[in-house]
Picture 1 (spheres, rainbow, N blue to C red):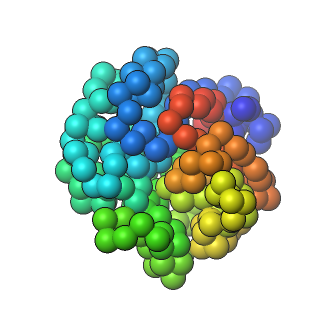
Picture 2: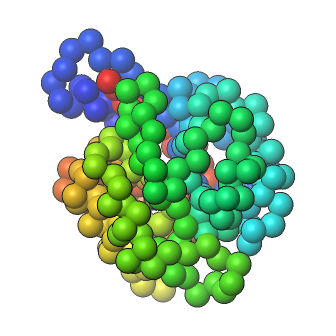
Length: 214
């Protein structure tokens, strides 16, 4: 993927190599591959669901030990914001209705399942109205990181049902990030689409690379 600044016609841009993944779900094998790949990364993004059903999040995050690059994490529906903030490696940025700028790249994150999932009390979910309010804090971003996908894009279950978020779809259209990264819907892992100028990618537990610039 071309760098942001390159696509804007700027010269002298600095490439930032980003490794992104989602839905690790406490998989030691997938974590080992991500940690190994991350040696070449300038920034690592994790788009939620590091553990399973709120169980042993500390152990799941521990599987990522060895990643030296800065990390940006959002909570999935399998862990709460507070739980992830407590378990995250020192120096990691945990975003949930908040943003950060790293190496000139502006990121904004929103975790949890949106809209509410049918999984029961353990699942960390937001209503569309709650998600809309939290996303309203974002005035601009190069990369929007959400656990849930936007409605109608990389959001179909094995039964072909679209279960993504209208609030996230509207936010992508309003903000116009270069990248909108998500996970959550396992059957759509590895798929991509577009909302206007924004490329949307459902990551999955794989090392997916993006090159961006400033």
